[in-house]
Amino acid sequence: MTSSLPLLASVPLVAGMMGAALIGATPVQHASKPVAPVPAPQEDVVEHVAARSSDEQRRVLDYWTPTRMSKALPIDLLDTMAKAALPKDGGLLSGLSNRAGLATAPELSGAAGRIVTPRRQSARPTATTSGSRWGTGGLVTRTTGRVFLTMDGVDFVCSASTVKSASKDVVVTAGHCVKDGKGAWAGNWTFVPGYEPGGGKPYGSYTARRMFVAGPWSRSADDSYDVGMVALNTSGGRHVADVVGTQEIAFNSSRGGQVYGFGFPADPPFDGENLIYCSGQVRDDPYGQTRDQGLRCDMTAGSSGGPWLSSFDATTGRGKLTSVSSFKYSNDRGTMYGPYLGDSAKALFATAERA
Image 1 (cartoon, rainbow, N blue to C red):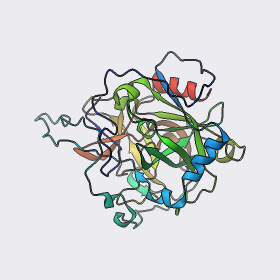
Image 2 (cartoon, rainbow, N blue to C red):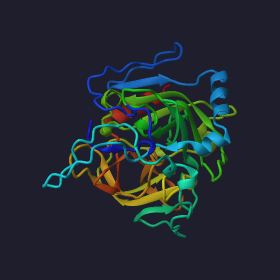
Image 3 (cartoon, one colour):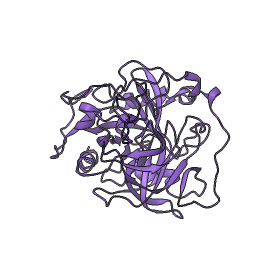
């Protein structure tokens, strides 16, 4: 596990959330009932069966009342840890391995503490911004959505995106929005594409059918593998891809280049109600602690799992998903890091689209 800061909830949580010292655990396949086996790819994939029956799906949908949705906490950027001094060579902060919840006052994540003044919103998208309202429309406004989930009895929000898949049911998010390292899997997992202010669900809600993370994430919360893929149930008999469309997904892409990152940040100065984007050139992790790349970005808690789109056409809102928002270092809160989608992510996707 690296010394980075994953997007965890900024409230006191049950000790062990995204737990420390996860190395050496054996991945376990969790299932609520027997299911047909998915052909195992060569890479290490760990899965969990979520809501499969119509009764289970209805229970999850009924769980997310407007009140629960409004009170769900953002999975945050920072967690409780000892603040160690930077080495003289400017390296990574040390001693940052505890992935418990922040001791930050709960009201900072609650409605009363949020700053609801909109951030700058450009009439036209800009190629370089650290955080602006997306007001241009296009496909990305439908394929990007909010995720509502429960972990260790606490309700959270994340972000996610649909991607083109054989099943028409796959969404991509951060691994920590699906599974707490070697700890619990998320429950009540629901995706709301094209989320609108005030809890709007213009395209409905989609519950999780099966969830997938890479073995290194499940065993040790390795930030280089902080990717989760979810096979959704249909809604009203329709696949999510047929309702909102999809973004392409790309693996083993060239590093660097221009990226647009999207999400629904919910901690101040954002309130989780609007689609926000960052854009610019990405660069390798300067500390060499992960294979991730960094993007200058002020998005906060709740943006976890939001898509990073390369080859992005700002007119159509279409691009290729090449990463997701994952973590920030405590000594550089202006840079968001996202995992490189290599062979491990490709194996996750191959499994998820067959599920």
